[in-house]
Length: 402
Image 1: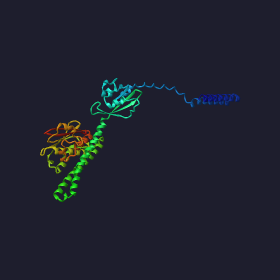
Image 2: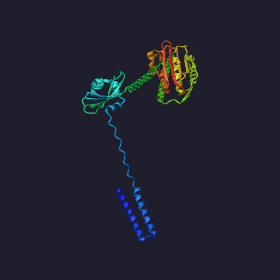
Image 3: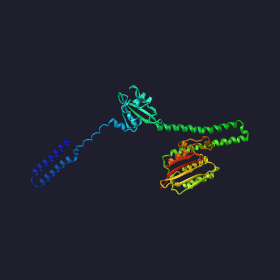
């Protein structure tokens, strides 16, 4: 860069000198003056080219900002939302807030076998330094009896180890629910299927020759097949509702009209108690919902009330606006009621207070579970209250459209 600048300056000086010499040779007339002026201008332009062609010397860049200080190890582990501890020579030298909340504030400086009172954990944490510790350890009983933890241990030095605890309670509960669901669904399907196969074999062996016996067997087989179909329909319905759980419904539904529509549908069936359904529908704003699912909710609630209410007593369906942001829908029966210990589990799949009575009434054990998932999808609330000997009332609160 500096060499090019010097060359251009020399060229400019040469042009100026040559112009001056030419002017002296020509003399003092106008032509000499013009030559001198042109040469001077050319020299200036060459000199300016030297300045304009070269980029300006970059201004001295500001010094880079200083690097932040290295974070302390205690600050790092405090940023972790799960329990983390650092063990040195089998003693807890660092523990973040979640670890202290789980195991106690006293664990700092304590022997790790006393901090984590679990045989499998103690065996891993007191093992020889060259022992492989890649496999996680599953712990039950830390915190509460139901909690399940996964412990990971990583060596950070000859006598230094990092212990990380991951809460697996939720995933374990989900696995257990799935296993229970598969087992219950298999049982519910196997029972009517076994009954159907048994009667088919009996008919094949000659029992079908008696018209009365044949008709009785066929009636039972039809009932069991119908029960299986109803169960499969409920399972598919539940699956669809769960798949749409996080997609908010987009239809505008007037519940008063829907209640009257469902009541008419119930009355048109051959149910002997269809005339016991009584509606008390007040003026209420519409809700944002899925009309088909809300109709299914009403059919399930009214159907349950008819099954378990006393014959000849009314099943009352009430709709009202609470004056705020919610619309209240309730279905009340006058039956035997439900004991308090059963209420928290009524919406579990296949849970029955009286299995024999439920199956005899044609229930699949999925009705209230379906109701719960429909309410959750509609961002509402479900409440079940019951008094033994008096009856049960199921209340659904749904957000109103303002």
